[in-house]
Structure formats: C-alpha cells, structure tokens
Image (cartoon, rainbow, N blue to C red):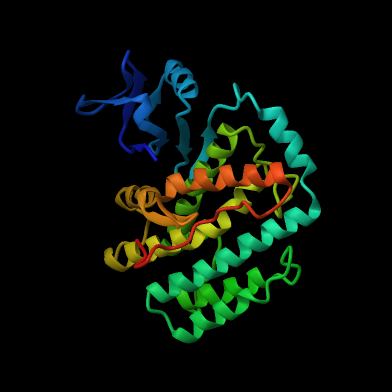
Length: 304
C-alpha cells in the first residue's frame, strides 16, 4: 500500500517532471509527490483545480483519482481501464465461472464476514451473548447463503455495535456518514485492484444488479466491512460528541484505515495491500473454477 494524497483545501494540482505538484491557492505553499509513491488522490474541495496533464500522468502510473461531492462523499472514480494485457481472458473466465463455484465463493465470503463481525464485537467488549449468537450463525450459512443468514447476522451485529435505535443507511448522522465514507474509500480501492488485474467490476458473484457497475466490488467488500466498522467505532469513541457532522479531520482519519493491519493467508498485511491479495486469489478461483484459493481478511490479535 502506497500513500493517499488528500486534497482538502483550495489547491491547484498539476505535475512537474518528478510527479504531482500541489499549490495552495491561498498561501501558495507547494508540495511534491512522486507518482510511484501514490495509490490515489482524493479531491475533497469543489474549488480545487487540476490539469489534463495530471489526469494523463495519473492514468499512465495507475494513480486513481477520487472526486467528492459537496457533502464530502466520494462521487466519481477515475482510473485506467486500458493496457491490461489479460483483460479479455479474465472477462471470459468471469463469464464461465460455474454457479457452484459462485455459491461456494459467496459462502466463504459470508462466513468470513460474520466471523469478523463477531470478532469486532468481541474486541469492542460488546455483550458475549451477541458475540456467541453471531458465531452460531456461521454454521447456518449454506452454499450461496440461500437462507440469507447474512441479513439476520447484520441485524444482530448493528444492534449490538451501535444500539437498537441505530438504522443503517444513507442517513446524515455521524455514524452512517462515517460508515458510508469509509466503505466508499475501500470500495474504490477494490475497484482499482480489479481493473488493474484485468477484471470487470460489474460481473459479480452474488451481487448482479444490471444498474450496478461495481457488483464484484460489492461482493469483495463484505468481509472488509467489519474492519471498517471497528476502526470507525474506535474513532467515534475518542472524538468530541458535540460535533455531529463529519469533519475534514474525520475523513483524514478514515482514509488512514487503509493502513490498519489485518491477517490474510496467514500473513499480516495493511488493509490496502490485503485487497490486492484478495483480488489475486479471486483470479486463482476463476482459473480453477473453484472457491478453494480465495483469501479473505480477518482481524489480527488485538484488532490492529
């Protein structure tokens, strides 16, 4: 995982012969960043400026551009879909993945997600009854999760995590705003890795909406969500409760969650790097038409 450049002030963002150059319009402060040190640039000020040359160079160096709206939510992604030598091969393998393999992949994702939810509650010292209930849900997950155990577990989980009055959705309260922002950043990084590795993000395993260009991203993110939830719970616990809106400082902290650590394939990775491991393992699943190679993240001991 490299660095994320977060542009929150009014900046002119361009290039020089070494990489990205930012100039603060108000105090004329200049900063420089090498392309090879950046994974993404997040523009979170509607008055910032950027050049066409910046877009060209970021595309060339696989630096993703993320643009936020006036409410500071990620709205537009720009990354490179060209130059992927195995793109047609990957597309063909995605289309040929059997229903049985999809069902087993989704089973693995749901089981890992619920296990991570239980671990999240345990780390945050929520009631043991809720933790044990989630653990018991795992053995009820069928191939393809035909009985939708995931949804039942989610109700138990969020009631315990944020209280029974909490409603998950696109609301403006601080908890939902934080979750939506954190999920959006992770989702964007997942999409980037999918595209870099020649995969079509619209062809999902379980998500298959014809109106969603990110179905596969939404499949993969599921087991990463509890890692985001845990980081956000810790952040909200330590911040001023009188501040009810998501601040620039909040968003900067949420971007840092990409550098939190998790376990994947028996090794410790930063979350941003773990995403690449998951995507690579999914490609192995496509090649073998099997779920056996899929690597998904879990918490490290102690949570971070």
